[in-house]
Length: 544
Image 1 (cartoon, one colour):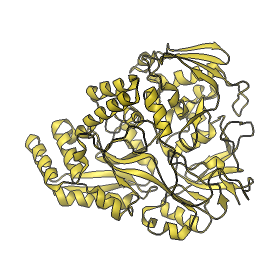
Image 2 (tube, one colour):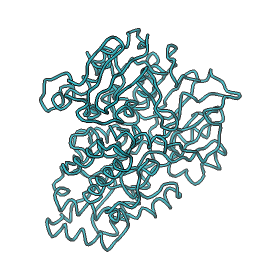
Image 3 (cartoon, one colour):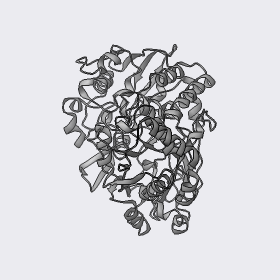
Image 4 (cartoon, one colour):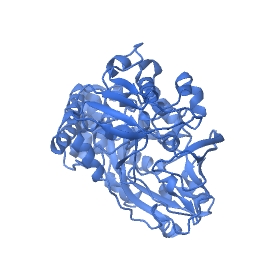
């Protein structure tokens, strides 16, 4: 899913740049004419890869549920602008020390009070190495994180967190990062009740939150559906305007699309690839086509010997230059994707399509063969070996483009290569997280908050929970660290793009194209819109 930081101006300008407009029809979330708040919205979903513990969820299936059942200090509106949820105020003058005051009388749905201690305990749990949470890296800015997160550490608290009173706590960062509050809308930073810290696995099956929705009784029926009902005590900016949302878990998008056409599904987040030519004529004005902060990549683990060192870097460059992105986006996606020029997304402030090294993302058969030959001169590729690209076959319509890409690479480089389908997203993510992949993997990123850094640090820093390739480059990390400390938009953006120059040579992942939210809805609902991150604003959808 989604997955920790920027410089002040860099982050705030990024928010402003995300006032996206949709190209599709339908009534937007702002309208309420003829709406029916008594309807339960049926949406497509995917089986969460792990128990629903906020600091241990880094993929979209579980992330959507956590977004809707928990509220943190802030959330993001449709344009990406942060708005207060539990925070009364977040103040800091030097970019390193912050005072956070909470609103009064905030509670979880079990009645437990949410206090400053709740936040401090939740964040310390998420950061501590002994708890092995996938999103631990989001707390890295806080002083004391290094000690708490070190391998084998028994330290359970970060020295940068201090409780002042029931509704106030302070945060000291390791270095000035004045945009730090912008990140606080990500789910790793939400509070959790005491029971979650005592038994996170059990809590993850029946999470108790404080967001606009709560899990219905027996709400998570594994591989079938997840039922959410409105939280009557929630009074934040995302108040539910319907009677609940049920995520129906499909084994493939084609079945979901047929249910949509039959009005058995109210909203489909992503139109399957094979329906892109006809979905607008099928659905009329009940469609949307809207750029968002997301991309598609192929990650190739560096723990595989043939993909490590200089030879591995040359092979990744060869694979990248053997891919004709223009052809795939035109033929497979009907022109609704744009070939990638770097590692982030065009809707973000600071994006550049002319970073040195971008030529490695352009189709060039001659240079691809040349790079592969140079790699062979260092270490000969086993001609009998088949390079595989793992992908989930249940959601996203990946088969068509993976097969097209495989054929392009095969025809250009003459190697054995094939797609490796997994039945579910959960299965392929489990192998990626465990570091047991035997080839490349279809990957991608849906932004957690609007920044260039969010597409770089959480994916390519050593030890990051979403670092599928296990990439480790100290020069890259030093460069993005300088960007985080920058005091101006220009300097922050410049550093992040300098870091991308390194990535464009090393290619721990191969950028493919930028994403566009293309979805549709039934004639039973209205007030449909998508957010800056490509996710429908489920709370605003009503019946009609």
